[in-house]
Length: 89
Image (tube, rainbow, N blue to C red; front, side):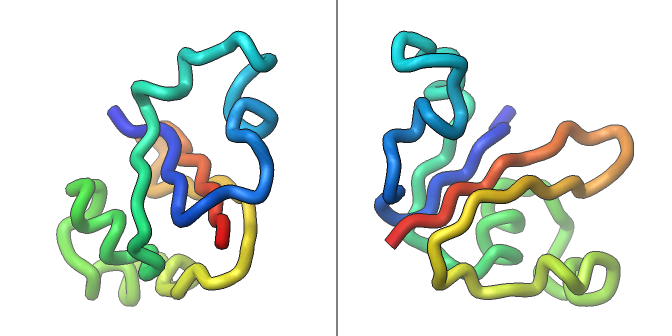
């Protein structure tokens, strides 16, 4: 199960954001790396949502293009675990 999405090239080392310390690598096997910047397409490709239009209808705040460096968490439902998103250059 994917818990982290890394878009582009992060500005800081990922262990600062996703790990306990520089020796913690437990997050690496739960991380997707992509250059796609349209968040609904990423979520659809991961099969976390049924369609891109579902995002526009049910979670319109996630219908975004990620073009600026950022680090945030999203939740797609009460029973689904949160997903951390790291946006780099």
